[in-house]
Image (tube, one colour):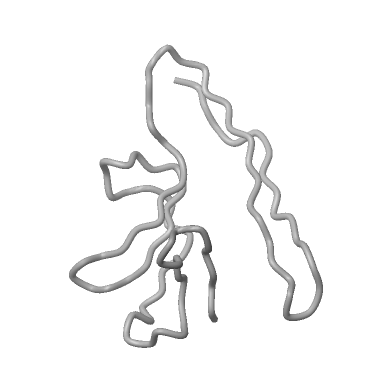
Length: 92
């Protein structure tokens, strides 16, 4: 199987405290096999860690781990998804 990241960019927007970034990547896969790799944001029920994985099958717990944080005891810190699911914020 031949696949890989052809191009990958981090694009920055805004200035000062309003600055944020997005990860843009173009992936190539030359195969007749179906696979389910992409981005997964998950938590560990035993440790309470928030984790972001790139290039991971949603049924597996491996891949490139992009970030890990353990601020589950502090509601004003960490990666937070709003109750309605429409807003994702990171409070460092």
